[in-house]
Image (cartoon, rainbow, N blue to C red):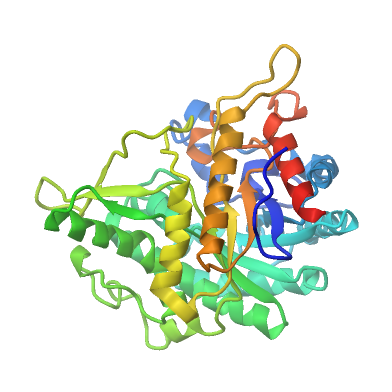
Length: 448
């Protein structure tokens, strides 16, 4: 039996997924193409040529997946809505069939006592909007607000809290700066408008949600940043990286200003995309909660060659690694949470861990059981770190592990498994892993 943790009353236990990673049915019932459909079709863009065309077939199998959630005893389920399933062209004509799917899902969750927590954007921009500039175009922020209004008007009578964006840093860097993810652009620092326009979209959508009486959150990927040494150059490089990864997507929301990006040769207007009044719109209605996605710390050194970015990533040595090769440092979560509290003080809203989990190379054994002890160890260590942060006075209200199901892991295709439930992608058979039973028992111990 997992150890019971000292957590606040009403602490919420959940699991997370994302639309393109699990739904499949990419060309059914009026759904339009997203940037991930187009990107995954490029030769060599995704490992083994994998796509999300079928994924976990959640679009057809959602009742089975909700039953798995009920078996875990989840308080909440964080999922994302596919923008192009609702608005095939990103704006204009509404696909009622797409809204009907999410309507059924929400009702199914509520029938089993599970609170829906939708994310409005988890990286799958309608391709029609990308053709018009995507998040590099200011207009996309306004289309996002219109989409948010449409969805909340259909589902808002049963959904109390909404997440606007998932990991805008990762989407900007991997999608627009480095080209590793959709839409596959390689703009480096010229990708910064994608940061501002995502945040502007958040602010505009948050205003719509607040007007209708809903709670508003955003899910940011955040990381403790460690200098590679105490040398002045490494410390400065770490500060520059922290400004880009963490503060660029948090300071405007909580402080109403962008951090100092002078290390990148960029001023407060991010190269001219920030207009008067934008930061007021971004911070405007405030946040009811901050979603924190945590996987690992980042160690940073000063570059050894002139030109280029003002930092290089250095390896974190002497720690275990996930199947993805990511360092496992559970106390980094405590460090991150306490650091947020110390940095933002009273401006920091209550926190929910909206993603935390690890990839393990796990398959059913001869007896059909999936033994994934490394995942159990990972979750247990990070939950201990979360409880330690709570003991230090950080207001943490919930924990949503990543992920409920093995799924399409973006550019890695189907090679990295993060789920509590094993999915055979040929047969779509779901097999709860040992970590599923462990998490179920942990949740039960807190619900007594």
